[in-house]
Image (cartoon, rainbow, N blue to C red; front, side, top):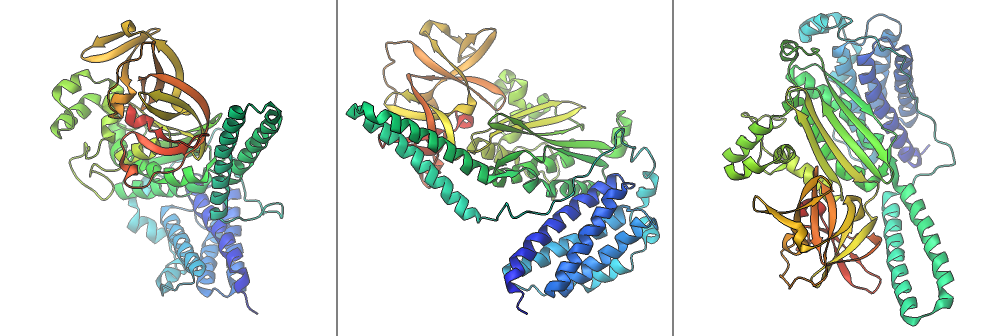
Length: 541
C-alpha cells in the first residue's frame, strides 16, 4: 500500500508529539511527582511509535520504543526522572525531530542511531547520576524542588476536529496583501467621491468601509498564532545553557496562549533568544555566588506575555546581578561609543540602552554564548522595525527586566500623517501618546538641548526635519505642532509643521537602497496615489 499521501499528516502529528514531549520532560524535571505528566509523556511516545510503525519508519520506531520503555519504568516507580535521564530523553527527542524533518524533505542524511538506541535501552540511573551529575544528589532535596502551594494543572493536547483545516502560509500572506491593497483603494475611491461631490455614493462607500474592516479582522484572525508557536524551545534553551555553565536556574513561562501575527512571531523569536542567553550568561550568578549574596541558590528567569488591546508586551526578567549604570557608562567611554561629557548628562534609562549599541559588551571574555558585543543591537533594531518599543529596567544586585511592546500585527496599522516642510510622513499610532500645539516661547534650552515642559515633565524636543536630515525651510507663522512619542523608555517630543490626518495604512517593506534610509521603516500609498514613508520611531528618538 502506498503510504506517501499520508506523509504530510504524519509529519504534522509527529511534530505535535515531539513538541509536547520536550515541554513535558522539562515540566517533570521541576516536579518529578506529577503522575499526570508522566502518563501524558508515555502516551505521546506510544502514539508516535504506533504512527511510525504504520508508516514503516523503523528508526523512529526504535527510538520511540526505547523512550517509552524508560518512561514506563519511571511511571512504575523504579526510578525518578533525574537530569541524566532527562538529558537522554531530550537527546532522543532531538533525533526524532531530525528524522521527521528528513521525512518531510524527502532527504536521507544517513544518521546512525544505533549508539543512541543502545544508550536508551541500557540506561542505568544509578551509574549516570554518580558519574555525570555528582551535584544532583546534593540538590535533590526539598529545597531544590519545593512543593507547589497550589496544584498545577497540565493542559493536554486536544485532537483537531474537522472544523479546522491547514492553509499554506503563502496563501495567508497573499490574502493580507490583497486586503491591504483593497484598503488603499478604498481611500482612493473616497478621494474620488469627495472631488466629484457625489453625495449619493457616500452610503455605498460607508458600507464598503464596514465590509473591509470586517475582512481585515478575519484575515488578521486567520494569521494569528499563539505565542506557544515559538516558545517551545525557550525552556530547553535556558536549561541547557544553565547546565553548561553549572548554574541552577528555574524558567517560568506565562501567557503562551496570547496570540500575535505569524510575521511578528517569526521576527521576534531570535531577539528573545538573545535576551535569554544574556540573562543566563551575564545576569545570573552561580549557586554559590547567590548563597553568598543572601539569595536562594536557584535563580529564576521569567518570560511573560500579556495582551493590552491591540498590543502585546513580552517581558523577560531575572533575579540575578542586575546592571550598574555607572559601569555601563564607563564601558561606553572606554569603547569610544560616548564621550565623558555625554555620560554625565545620561539618565539611567539611557545608560541601560548603551547595551543595545553595536560592539558594546561588559564581559571581559568571549564565550560561545555571548561577549562579542552583538545581539542586543539586533534586538532593538528588530523591535523598532516592527513598530515596537523596547524598555530596559534594572537594579544592581536584584536583576533586570526587558519589556518589548509590540503591535499585534504590523501589515495594516493605524497611523498619524504629519507634514514637515514639503514632506509628509506616517507615524505608527502605537508610539503616539498625544498631540499638542506649542508656541516658540515654550521651547527652552537645557544643557544645549531644546526642551519643552508639559505638566511636571521636561521633555527633549526634536524637529522632524532635523531627525530625517531634510532640507531646512522657513518656520511656519502658526504655532509649532508636536507629536509626543514614547520609545526605548524615553518620552520625546517630535516637532512637525502640521498634523494632516489619521488613517489606516498598508505598510510595504522597503528594498535596497531605500531600506538603508535612517529613520524609515517602510512605505505606504495614499488615497491620491502618493507614496509616504513610515517613520521608525526608535531611530527618531
